[in-house]
Amino acid sequence: MTLAEIYQKFEDCKSWEERYRLLIQFSRQLPKQTADELADLPEIEGCESRLWFQFQLEPRKIQTYSDARLMQGILFIVVTALTEKSAEELEHFNLREMFDELKISPNLTSTRLNGISQLQKLITV
Image (tube, rainbow, N blue to C red; front, side, top):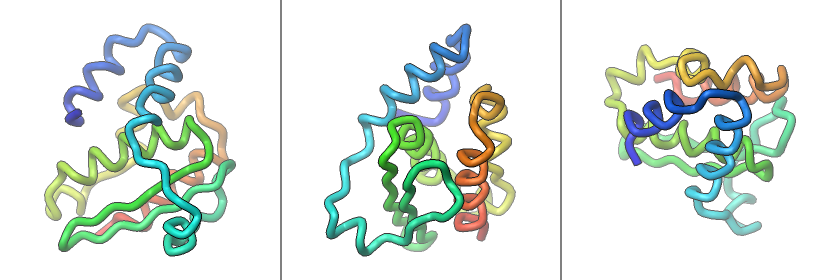
């Protein structure tokens, strides 16, 4: 699935409940990590749920996982965006703005938004 397709799916949603269901569906797209794999990934502090994330620009490598389905769906969108964007585009890419455009941010708790802020710090090149 492309980022454009994700945007279209969210555009078709009429309510937060529809957006939430879509995030849960997206959560199933990321592979489940084993305990050994998670032990090798840095855990992100400050998020409501447990969140692991590692990003490498060149060569592009993204590893991520959350124990919460909602965050796992959000991570699917993050991975899709980070996979599609060039290094130059990532210089100006803002996760919070993307989730505002998708109309997700207003319904997230401050700790989930903090998790997204922590991810932003890790992807800023």
